[in-house]
Picture (cartoon, rainbow, N blue to C red):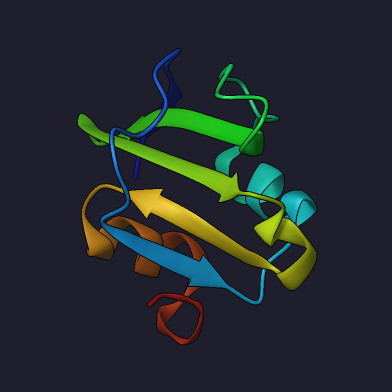
Length: 88
């Protein structure tokens, strides 16, 4: 899978990942949080394409503390990146 960073956060949650950390996500994607998002709600936000499909990951209202993140994009992308055991 080819991952390319883009400067667009996810539009809305289409799923989620859990049991992962900011470091896990950074390692899987190959880059640090790269999108500016609503600072009153989001601390870390990644925008990217996976094989040309637009995707996003973000921590909503401090959910990173619970190792839970919202996702935007096809479920199979997140299963490939993090494994089915970590994808809602």
